[in-house]
Length: 287
Image 1 (cartoon, one colour):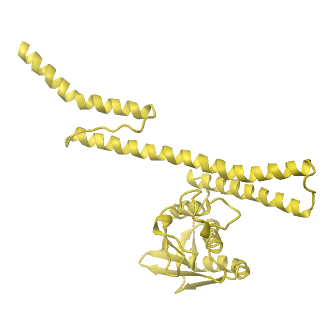
Image 2: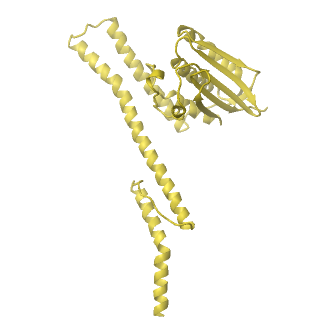
Image 3: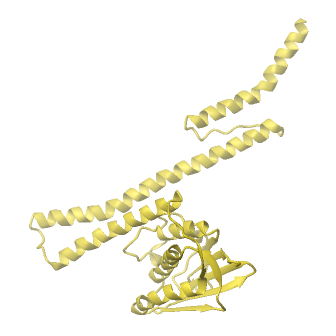
């Protein structure tokens, strides 16, 4: 009986050891420590530890992303606020005269704040699924034509050639206003990041049950590493493709959320024209 008791005690400790490690790891996760790593074998306990390690890495990345997000938001807000504060103090102290030029400068910084807060609001709504969608069958090609027409004058002012080509009408099930918002964001992005004298082309085609829209623009270009980050909130490219005075790099993040709400996908890659290629895929509406 004594020998059996000793063997039982030894087996119990042996079998419960990985369970205790798992419990300890979960307790550390609950306490906010995402740096711990559990080492297990090839059995079921080992696979469970691997899953916990994967969860820990994911939580650690999300925590770092949240901290970076808060830091970026603070930076984006601080810049126009600092400029506004400095210019108002200069006006109050009489260092600068209050005239139309100073008023325009103040208005520009206020507009930057407005664009930022509007984009943040739209992004937060799309992240939590708060944007309202009313899906109806629409002609995708016709919707693109309308948005392209709206931006033709802006393209001409920037000396950029904007064109659209579609093989035939393609029906999709979409929210008309959100689709227009999506297309407008994509066009504004291309117009802002294309050099004068450049070209922006849009093409629409159907492959099986998918409608595929591609947007190409000319230099400046992007690397594949940058393309993988373009849809992250507040991501800024290098200075050659960062000439925008409004917004805060949230437009493409909003685009991704809208596309996903339409059960589609959106990706970016270096364009054969030397700039950026954006490919959006949406399911075709079958009546």
